[in-house]
Amino acid sequence: MSSIKVECVIKEKTEVGESPVWEEKDSSLLYVDITGQRVSRWNSLTSQIESIATEKPVGSVVPRQSGGYVIAEGTRFAFVDWVKRSITAVAHVNDKEKPNTRFNDGKVDPAGRFFAGTMCLDMKLDVMDAALYTLHPDHSVVQHFDQVHISNGLDWSLDHRIFYYIDSLAFMVEAFDYNIQTGGLSNRRMVYKMEKDEGIPDGMCIDTEGKLWVACFDGGRVLRIDPQTGTRLQTVKLPAQKTTSCCFGGKDYSDLYVTSAYTGMDSDSLAKQPDAGCIFKVSGLGVKGIPPYSYTG
Image 1 (spheres, rainbow, N blue to C red):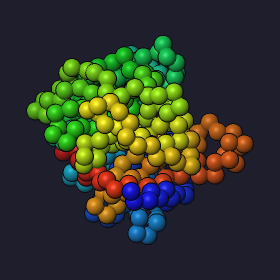
Image 2: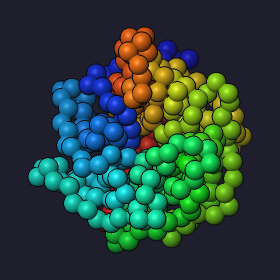
Image 3: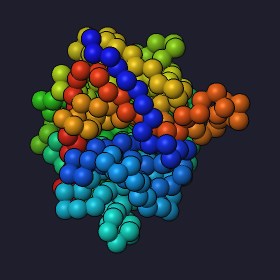
Image 4: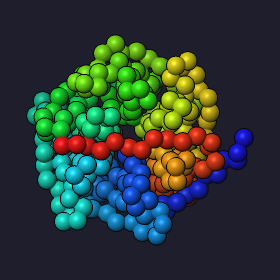
């Protein structure tokens, strides 16, 4: 086993860091601060950070093939022109019917569609007003299902036949059969049930062996899970309890970048966890990730 190294690489803290995406062309990490309402880019070669402020809490950001990015912000999808530093609305979801929801995690599928889900601002087990949506390349929006607490981590199997999904307060990772032609989902099932001390499942990504990496909010760890057998293969502990999401990046996609949050922590907890809200790089895992897909619309 190679020795695993965890280092805090982005020291500019995020209230709720999320949605990390590696940008190979300039060795940068793209990410959001949801409640800090900003999209940021950290250049791993210069350590410089550029940010753009959003109007509302921003749940996720993804690259757009034609340049710039797409964000799921508040209850809308919007395009970000990084050069002009402008944000343009593309489509809204049903915020009239579900006033207490906002967008959360999102990711682009292998066909270039942007999947993103909402979460209930009222985080109670009996409130399930959120849903999972897709922004298609023609800018139309489809709702896949509702009855969601906190729509979170998502990714696709290497053969593109399975969609993996997390509703955080269901405390499990689920799978669906995935139709790459239509973007449709069917045959929902559980692949991993969280154990007591593992915290709340949050963001997620897949590696080149088809295993899932799940960040555990309030668990201070990332789990490596085999979705075929439903077993935990590895646990990587981090010096921040509120680990939120992860993605592979760096040379050959062999580093795991992990975002975290400091929201809701009192001064006592913050003193004990000086790295809360930082973004970490985990190296020496001995596995690699795959490059992210870009939205084609």
